[in-house]
Length: 225
Ligand SMILES: C[S@@+](CC[C@H](N)C(=O)[O-])C[C@H]1O[C@@H](n2cnc3c(N)ncnc32)[C@H](O)[C@@H]1O
Image (tube, rainbow, N blue to C red; front, side):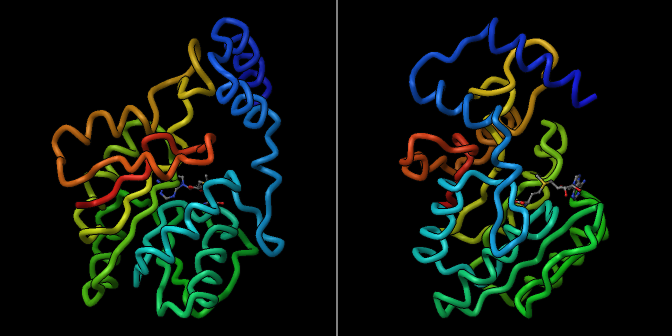
C-alpha cells in the first residue's frame, strides 16, 4: 500500500509540477519524509520544524491553560507542548487523544492521555468534563486526516476553543496544497475547513502563522475572534 502510494505521488509530481520555489521546496522536503524522522527529546514528532516554532510563539502569545490534541502518535508533540509550558511558566495541561496507544508515550504531569476515537461521544464527553473550569482553550486536530473525519472534529471541538485562542487544523497541505495532488488522493483537512468556515465566521485563518513560507498547515491556523 505504502509502495503504491509512493508511485502515485511520483506520477502526480510529474503531472502537477510545483508552481513556484516555495512549492518546489515544500514538495522536496515533504517527499523526503524527513518529517517522519524528526524528534523532540528522543520522541518522534510528525511535524515541520517551522510549525513547531509557530506553536512556541502561539503558546507564549496566548497562554492557553489547556490544549486538546487529537492524534498523539508517539507523544513527541505532546511532550513539546508540556515542556514549553514548563519553560514559559504557564500552568497549562494537554489532553491528548488517540485510538492506537504507542508503548513509549512520554509521562509528564501536564499530560493526560485519552484512549479512543476523537469523534466518539464518550471521548468528547470526557474532554468536556476535563475542560469545564478552563478559561483559555486551544485545540489541535492531528488525527485521521480524511475530510469527513476532520469535518466531524471541527464540528465537535470548535466550541471548546475560547476567544483569542487557536483551532489548528494540521496537514492541510495534502491533496494538492501543494503535496499529494491529483489522481489517487482524496479530500483532506483543507476541504474540511472549506466546508466548515463559511458557517463559522467566529473563526479566521491567521495567515501570519505561515510566515516561514513553508507550513504543513496552510490556512490551518484558525483563530477564534
Ligand atoms: C499524524 S499522527 C499524530 C502526530 C502527532 N500529533 C505528532 O505531531 O507527532 C496521527 C495519529 O492519529 C491517530 N488517529 C487516527 N484516527 C484517529 C481517531 N479517529 N481518533 C483519534 N486518533 C486517531 C493515529 O493513531 C495516529 O497516532
